[in-house]
Image 1 (cartoon, rainbow, N blue to C red):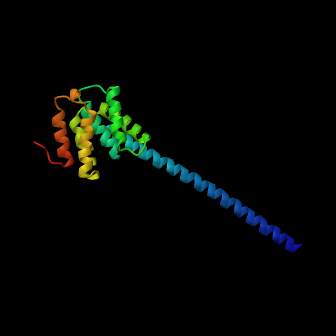
Image 2 (cartoon, one colour; image 1 turned 60 degrees about the vertical axis):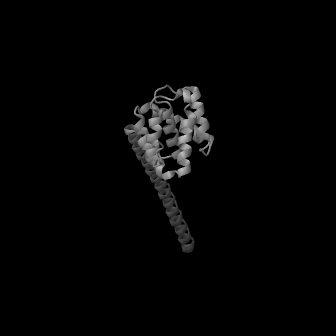
Image 3 (cartoon, rainbow, N blue to C red; image 1 turned 45 degrees about the vertical axis):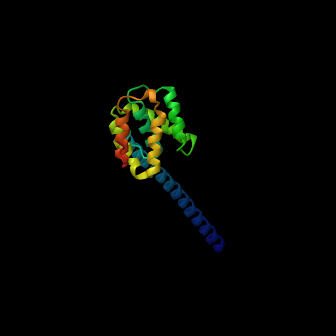
Length: 176
């Protein structure tokens, strides 16, 4: 009989500790989830603050930076028409990895362009990101994209100066 009581005691103790370990595991999982939520909130708040300072400073994707730069130069003295947006989409599609990335880049570019009134600031910030990430050929391709999106009849009086400024900021030789 005492052997049976000992076995029942051992099983009861094992069940008790098994239950306690399971409970502690669930508690640890909930703590990890809470930490993940807090980290996410901190990152989102940091991004919001950064975006509030300047939407162009918050850009970390070269495709989004290129789209914002192109649209800022093309729409400096004009409204963003559906035709201009479509030309931008076609140009961004040549460098984007997916249709989703094209959509994100164009939407962010439209928003950022409306938020920042000074095109030289957009050129400064976006070119700083793109200068180190693009090869010489890709930089020339970017300049071509700006010219393709902006039709000759739609080019404003500052267009050539903006292109020269972009060339300098990208570290390219400025043509005479």
